[in-house]
Image 1 (tube, rainbow, N blue to C red):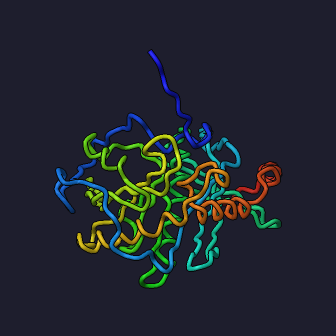
Image 2: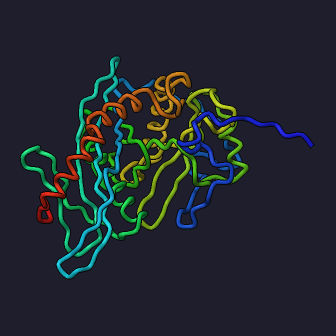
Length: 317
């Protein structure tokens, strides 16, 4: 027996852009007959030019410290002190970072929510609610806070006609010209027969639209290929989605064509980005800028210890 080995393009500590045995989501209903019948699926060429002005919205987060919060009742619960930032970069012949917001919080599930404030140094961590005090619950609360900041920015950037890409799923909370950009494929939305169409995509081609729906949202979705990089047929493939509400099928198809025509020109190269090609050049640059704006983690850690030592605890807000 012989085995052929191909190495994944992303470093091991970033996970993988491809899941060979992806999970199915029993809560999501998928309709693959919306643009063309499933039996007629084939790669599609965009029927429109790339967008003139494209925006990319993304965020970063950092856990600053774990904490223990003791309430007046004597009960002690864990907390998470964290920082996050989100911003937007505009590309219209040149790329410029137009928005950047930095926020900080102390996440806890306790009844008595508190924050931390260093009035002299201007460093503040707002009191933030978590649904659970488990590691997963605190981490999910931080992720949700970062995503909420991203959505706030995505809703306010761009002029009519601009195309806005939000890094990650949109989950129904975006404008009709906002497209969710999903770099990793961990849910199997398509049957194995239709996955063959994804593997056959050429650069700058997309699949037909398919509709994903749950109890809370409905999205038009499609896959597209950014480049020929990678040893696995899915490694340079991303999924895009946009809310179905208020967006008719012809409008969604035109938006999918415009997004598919626009994205490959921003694909990164392996020698420039370890998560190439999915971590697009504007997104990578924005992430570096946002991490810089978070400040030095070691310095913030020292200031946190001083704040706790002097009892710089504020009321919930």
